[in-house]
Amino acid sequence: MNTRPQPARGTARRAWLRAALWGGLGSALVPGAGVMATQAVARPLQVTLLPYLSTRVMLAVFDPLRQHLAEHIGRPVDFFTATSFRALAESAQRGDSPFSLLPVPLARIALADWGHRLVVRPTLDSAVQVLVPRALGLADVQALRGRQVATIDPLSTPSLMLQRWLVAERLAGEVTVLHLASANAAAMALGRGDVAAVVLPQGPVVEVPGLAPGELVVLTTLGSMLMPCFVAHPSAPAADLLALQRGLIASNERPVQTTWGRFVEGSPRDLAPYEPYAALARQRLAQPAR
Image (cartoon, rainbow, N blue to C red; front, top):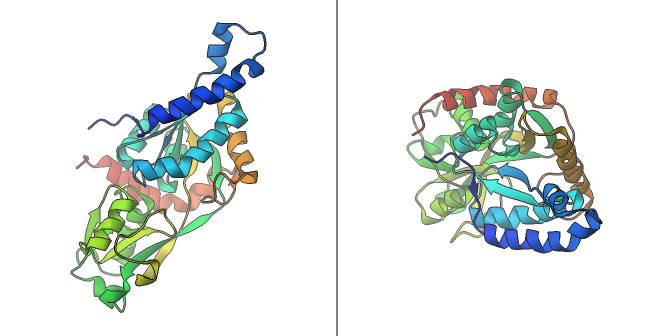
């Protein structure tokens, strides 16, 4: 498996946007500078994103933030995705990109085990819900026995929360869990009737084909989890970290993102309560990839 971060589809379009932006700003940022200085300033700042949505949806969700960062930092910004959460974790550990957007359990591991630094954390918690079609008439969580439930990557927050919840409800081994590539894929499986339920964060940018929002009900809520955090590899230049941090915090005042609440500097201590989920993630990372 290729575990290096993969450019999201539409890279050529983003590169064109970046070139157009830089063509308008470059001379103003470095007046009188030579070609060498311009190229140095124009070096793209790279960030790898967690692949929780399809590439197409990821582009739609994150491109406004990318454009804001490029304008605020005065420098091109490239967003990448990884092929899986395992590939994301391994990429972050290696430092393939200096910055990564990681789910909280992996961010906790990065800070505690790999020497990463926290760039920002969001202020928003997201409820992780078990959603079922109303037409199934499932009365309680025990009605899931013998059924299939879809969620996303085994190292994702919903999957880790589901693992602990199944044990607590004595449903481990009684429910078949399907780990699909994205929230979109999980929603499609539910719409086709392949699964009885999906386990996803509240409000992901997905549509369930064939099911109107009113036809879905929340069977239960597994708990809440802080939204993903931006972290920096130990090799990331301090100036770049500060620039990204300031750009992300400045986005609080602009309508470029609404999913995260507000970005704040935060502290590694803020992620300590999520160590139980990080412990599960470590176990899964130690197992051979399937």
